Length: 81
Image (tube, rainbow, N blue to C red):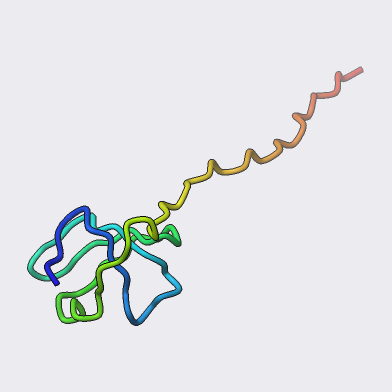
């Protein structure tokens, strides 16, 4: 299989990651964003575990905004008598 940027693939050894979109390809590795929301780098020695996947099977992980944390109430200084 030829691995190119933009292709949708799956990793035969880690199907729980879901399908992934190829972000970068070098001679030594490929960078893939998987449907589980994680970006992983796969070494060239493991390229044989990558398989083509259906484009509809790739669901980009929606990045949610971090929840706003409640701030503690500001303390007011007591007036000295």
